[in-house]
Image 1 (cartoon, one colour):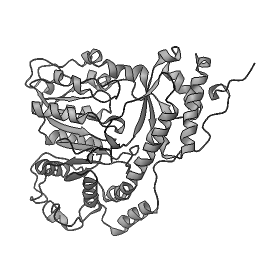
Image 2 (image 1 turned 45 degrees about the vertical axis):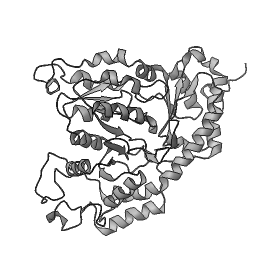
Image 3 (image 1 turned 45 degrees about the horizontal axis):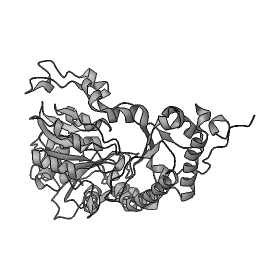
Length: 434
């Protein structure tokens, strides 16, 4: 009996080349960290500044720290007026929720197909996330369903650029404008992403956030940033990041209930050197992903998630495909992924349930009379109803989505070809997996 060619059954793996390492760093990064170490200034404010005012003289004064310099460079790179660096993308969301004045009982429209921080920043304000289903082609929030979810309690829309790919932010902006709603762009996965007209992620809404957590395409281990073109919002976020101070207050004078969410000088220094590499890395991923999709174009039942048609630079934090088991004679997605893994391809299913199925929605009190979430409301939101309201997100989680991390596409073309060969090989022999 002839031996199977599939690696799962003893055949040679399709991928033999070494996978790219992440993070990518060089002597510039080493020097930036070493210089910061030797400077003795390991936080944003130099010795003696604790007795001054907020210690940031504003955009017209020379930046005195690595963090301040990174803020200005990152804002400039995204064509935005202000950047406020913080400890994480999740913290950035918390600050934005507070800065737009979310109150208990308010509602914010968002997507169920993303990391939980997009929901918890709303919940931590005593407000309620209202989930709108994803577009089945893009996996981003579907603008066509947003207006039906707006109530007299809706205060904002929080779209996510999932996988680093723009949502339909023009349509979302039009809806928000007509209904007087705020927009916070969750661009955690989208540094450097740009639409035609030099319009960058982070420049469309009232504010935007990015994450620099270890898996992200711009990485300092942990960290985040808030972008905005509003002077008032920037001042509010700056103070919330800085224990509730203002830029005019004494060090021990606090005007708002804020956080110590300041980024360290080490993160700021590292992000400055990593930012210099971002554009070239984005370009390499774009070229490799285009080649990969070309190679897979004839595979039935495996369709790339639709990309924004007017993007000029993409992040490709994730490369997402939609798996249709019917085209594989009912082969479950999990078995398909098992075969790919044996071939040397790190592809995963991603989220296996949407945000509203997290246990916290069963554990929080949304309905009792003394619940903070019932403030100003006559009836609670039943999160059990969103399964029926979000069939596209449910399908993506349960049977359809296939994710690949951006790091796989930072190698050379021959590695991309081997990854594509693995998919083609599994397709050719998939009936052996049934």
